[in-house]
Image (tube, rainbow, N blue to C red; front, side, top):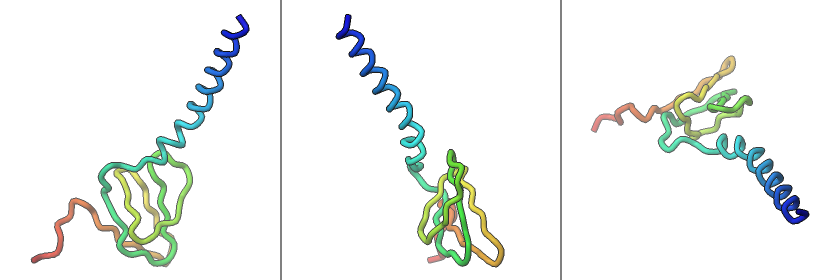
Length: 90
């Protein structure tokens, strides 16, 4: 009986840890194919990724997935290359 209780307690602890880590694991994943890539940043540009609540600073070459939000503050700008746009003429 005591061995069964120890087993159940360990299983409960392991399950609790796994459940606590799942949101962090899923938010850390990025989409397989990005939709946009930052090619120029001037001033204060921030982004909030799908499933996140905090705004993060945007840097050159950051990639974004569908549903991500980008905001540009006063006197700032950013250029984002979209994956579905054709390249420059040959």
